[in-house]
Length: 124
Length: 124
DNA sequence: ATCTCTGCAAATGTTTTGCATCAGC
DNA sequence: GCTGATGCAAAACATTTGCAGAGAT
Image (cartoon, rainbow over all chains, first blue to last red; front, side, top):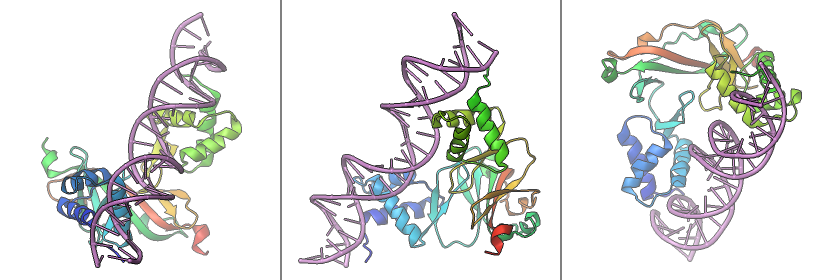
């Protein structure tokens, strides 16, 4: 049976409060402020368990270390600002992928990432 | 000045012959057949240099180790078969991404990956 | 009291780097 | 013969795992 520990609570809290996808080192640093003695292994183990339990879903930008966000949102994609590097959720999905599928192939899923400048950085 | 070594030639040859994106371990194994004594470090160093020289471009599927293919093709995306795990080039691009961009954000680039079954695996 | 979770440290896997030597020019 | 490139081994990172002890139930 699953136990409700301070570490687990701290990690869940951090991800919830962030409102954007976070990577293990970020989660570690932030959760550490609430639970000073915590080890990095606990962060990895907890993330893995939360993924199994579908509390978290991974956000894996090409060429970057994985980040994680709370699961349960509906299908969406992500935008990363080339200037400030923050990752934002995008609502909706352009369902126009069948057009580039080769004949005889079947389409089962897709990943889409957009890059550019967020409102804060579009001026800078 | 840059030198034309057997290792570099072997690596370039392997990637050219493959016709699909390869990862460093694959490149190492295959190039090793042409140049038995070669070390893995040379593969990494050579890939890095070829990226700088724009001979190669990276293919970074979310959650997977990076692969590399010859650069210079025109804009395209990739499809990975969920069954045999091979990666294929897709021609064309559904230019319909502006529709999900938030107001005030500017779009500068995108990455798209499709998943499913290739012709060979659609029956299996 | 039980049994899972944790922290630590060691192990793993991948990519990078230092350095003496080798080889392209 | 210079000087960049290579092979080896060690180092650097990120992530995983074994284990004994702490803590939740």
